[in-house]
Image (tube, rainbow, N blue to C red):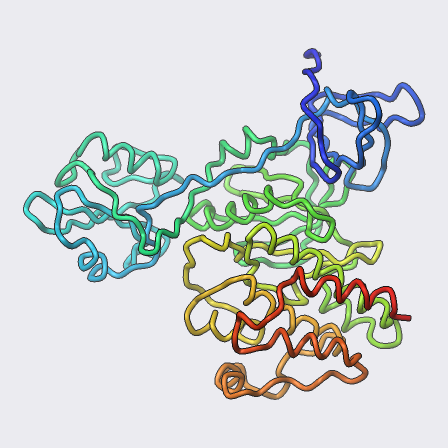
Length: 452
């Protein structure tokens, strides 16, 4: 066995670490673990060489600090020249004034999932080169292949290699917002890639945007497994969700266990929450089982998770009861970060759940923490109506126009007045007038202590 490394610490409570070696306990207080197990620091001890930690299944004990390493965040490779969805004519228009070698990369309109490199030639024309996927790599000519867009652009910055000219100057995206590319190697280097042999896949428990969701077991611990069936450009969207989750460590957010590359499948492995999503939980149990204490606990848990995202300047963009999962102990956790973005991130288009989305987000594709607050108000309405679909009896296509004219949902039956006041505050048409999650959280914590 390799010699244990020197202690990294000090680590704060909640820090995720991965085991570098097997550890067999020397006393009843020790927590046994195997190499590549995931542990969460509970607290430091007087001895800097030892910490109290717990496994994902909740087992707790002492661990030697030099047997584990902190899992690092996976960083995005920024691509200032990437402009997302854009028509050919628009690309030609913004590449003015013409300058030889000025370029941008956009998503292909004619070939969804592929890209187009647009570059100004020496003849003062804009040439459009189709970047296509071949054998899970990118190429312009079926001769030179690249893992992703970044090495492709770097190659043509150094050599024209068949293009009309060498790339010279990237045209930054308007407003300075950046898109990013996730590199699989960073998951490996940061300690997030799990071993296939340690994972057992069981029954399907749901369907995601890109593939099925399975229940499984990782080293004896129940897990949820999200799968991407095809290695296409969708892999970037899929991995972007995992990349964001490497930045997140909070009790009220679903915990990322790791990722796995299984031949033609990418897998995201998270903790498994046995009681399912909140909307199904509410509908199957109803008023006879779920108490006002349960409701305020769920609301407070979600608000805590969202206040953390707000502090991290992350925007969820798909907050709804269906994306809240319930732990065996009754704790609610925010999940499904497939649409989440940094607040300063390039905002791409897409289909959004109209009944949960703030008016300015639908109208201008402008998503902020304030638009998450609007969605939180709708989630509260779902919670206190025991899982009813929002805006009942109103066609989805009519919701936005009615809301902008001042229509708001009525208070659910038996909903406390203080909760409906919060909902109403969340639904202000003026986004700036909506409360922040950090302002809402003390209100919920106070209600939690007084609800019986």
